[in-house]
Amino acid sequence: MSDIIDVKAVDSEKAESLKTVGWISYLLHLIVAVAAVLPGAQVGVGILLVALIIDLVKKGDAEGTWQASHFSWRIRSVIWAGILYVVTSPLWFLLLIPGMIAWAIISIWFLYRIVRGMVRMNASQAMPS
View 1 (cartoon, rainbow, N blue to C red):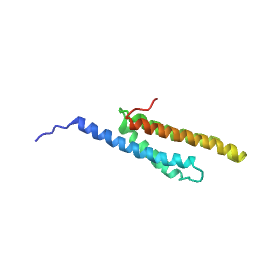
View 2 (cartoon, rainbow, N blue to C red; view 1 turned 90 degrees about the horizontal axis):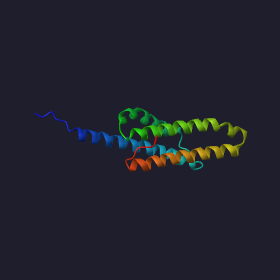
View 3 (cartoon, rainbow, N blue to C red; view 1 turned 135 degrees about the horizontal axis):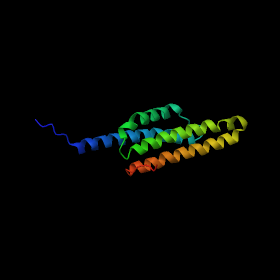
View 4 (tube, rainbow, N blue to C red; view 1 turned 180 degrees about the vertical axis):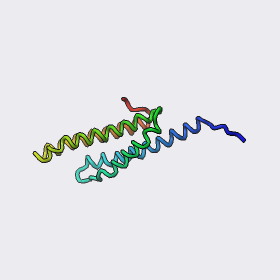
């Protein structure tokens, strides 16, 4: 009986599993980001929270790999977008147009970050710090 474990195969399986989780998370983020840019296409924060929870739970599994940077990238993107939405929300009460412009800019920025991350993930490249 052989108890030899092929470490390379295990690492390869783990890497593929993390990449699959990363793609699922990016796709959930993309749905929310596209809906945020398109008027009247709001899908709610539920999908975004699911993606954020996936990232928070699986981030530890990615430590020491190039994919860890993608988990951090997505988490930071959501947190910063949330902060920016909250900070600019008073603009909606003052004047409608400034609030719309601010949220449109934040939504486009969020979409850019998600697409940029997806492109680098597809190329199996880490995100910059």
